[in-house]
Image (cartoon, rainbow, N blue to C red; front, side):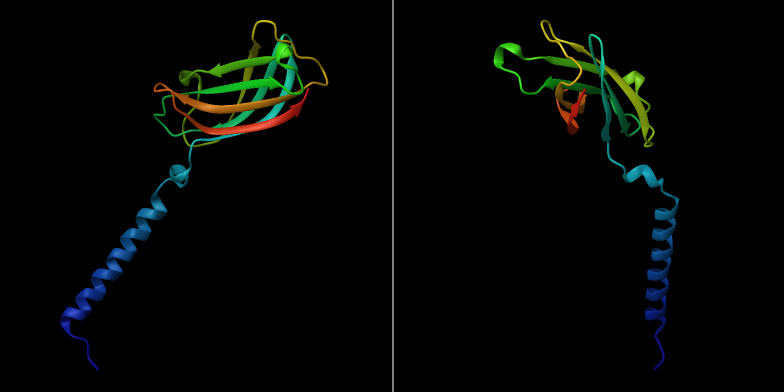
Length: 142
């Protein structure tokens, strides 16, 4: 059976579309599909507060700051201890790649942390409109 001219053109166009699509996919940056990610690597006592080592990645042009919060576990309402810290947007390297950062957390008034305490740490991106993204939590011993 011989193919008609129309069928050959259609098959050629389909093959060309596949080649162009595959070429576009192959040349696209592999990290372009990467979301704004966060991971908590280490939590340490750093008097008077805490330090949190974080691995992060973010998209170019992102206008968020990285926020870390910590709360001591196993305390009563009158003995709560909290700490917080941020890395401003101009200190973040947003190029799709993974980077390490250390966030210094300052304790709130009346809060204290000591060796052996269990803390719950939360890290997230926070934008100018009040939304948070990529929230990660971990419990760690100091």
